[in-house]
Length: 225
Image 1: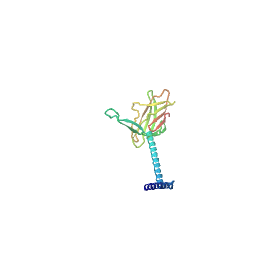
Image 2: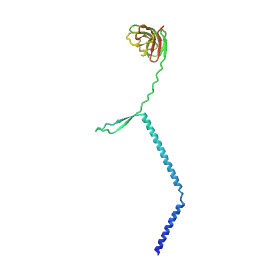
Image 3: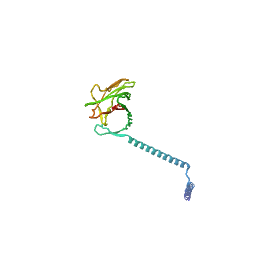
Image 4: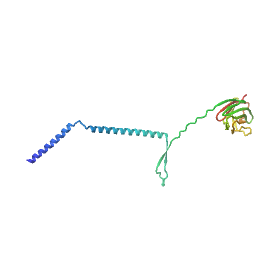
């Protein structure tokens, strides 16, 4: 009998415990621990912030790489230093294109002159005194004075030409004669004279204009008095 009573008592205790647990669940139904909620919210904020920062960095790195690929030329280099003739590795040489700024050309100044009247061009005082033509060449006689306070080169440019009375152009030619004007340095205040030779004029034509090119400036000299 005692054994039967003990079993009944054990079952009552089990039933009471279950009832007590159900009651605790009912009382706490719909409730949550505030600390757990706060920790969960903080964890979610940290996770989302980390994801935003990561994707932002990833997007910036991709854009940077795309910009470098556009501006750089990549040349693959194969390593052929293997003893068995097999390529071991490869590398890349990145060549950044050099940007060269376009040079601004100097402005050419045209000066209008007249034969027999001195004019100043590029620091020289020049006077065209006479012009003559033969069956071999056309000869223009000039005097040149360096009016600067220092020695400097006197050079006649290749675009120096003569125009005749109908506008036909005659090129400058090199004639080995003692009268040809020297194209060397001219001392300060020094004077020099000589001829510039051109192609011979066509029959019946006359020299009308001299285009004198001194590399920096040009002068147009009327050859008809």
